[in-house]
Length: 472
Ligand SMILES: [Fe+2]
Image (cartoon, rainbow, N blue to C red; front, side):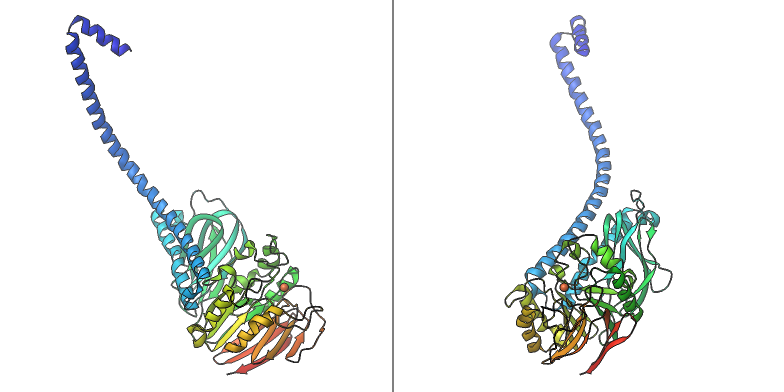
């Protein structure tokens, strides 16, 4: 208003009004052009900054997108596998494909490195990363000849770092700076059958150092342990896990009922991960789902299965053994997805190429130690005929809290359910085909050496309660 009045005043004394108006418009136009030019320059600068920022943001966004994509891919992959398991021509390939997907972790590492510049320390500990405490793990998942997953939980969100090496230097490192309290990092490019030292790190807080071994090349002798029903009594589970660790298995199968109440979140730490912490830090566990685990999200959140493990059934090859984990708390009647998937696994190249085919799940077809329960009718009805038709070597289960071994029509049936739950310590029936029964807490240890397999079971006094060797 002031500017306008002064112009009007000026126009009245020195210049004709219409000429002044024209001059004024020209001035405005020039100012506008100048402003636009300056603004454009500023905008350019801003754009440059914004552009830089955008690049950064985009990088971040891309990273996020990559992460999201990775997750999505995983999900998609899982969905695909779950929805159409015929895509799983080869479970080992699934592993590989899964590994490939998980290589995104490595991409994340690269991205993290790029994002944080050259300062490795910044790389490891973002500014916004507060100090955290470990509440679970680290523990191992999905080991293959070249990869392994390290998982752990923290009490608050932090970044994820695994330092590892074949020696004590721990010079190799995988980093994911996305903040989370559920850490899951895959190490890739490892050598088969090789021992590595490692430790996990979140926000600069490091776990103790432990060792793991990658899966050996095909045909290499190895040992696996079987534990089941670790529920309810962590003090017993602690002893069972320690005994199994002393035996130093390469891998661990769990035949279900990790905890007493799968829908009670805290049970997974108090009853499973804490009592078995030392074992799980050094031995990859491949669990199956028990009725007490109850297909809980707390259960599935805790593990990263090979391949198509979304519904708790999956398979993998380890040396010359093809393992198939079933979920007998899910549908498995003929025609069901799991049943069809099982047939596909048994007809796969992985099964044909293996010296041994070993199936495991929670429910036994027969049992001698449980009053009022003689075994799972549906396992007898639906699975036993398949096991016999395809000539599997072993079916490991739990559910009954004892140890039992028998052979029916060429298939060896083992119950190894003495991992901590209250014992079924009275033999209440006697099946002709069940030759060994022991109502004690225990773990089972199996040594595979080519075409010779030796199975032993040990109680908590390290007493051998069974010894069984077969050669093909
Ligand atoms: Fe059970």
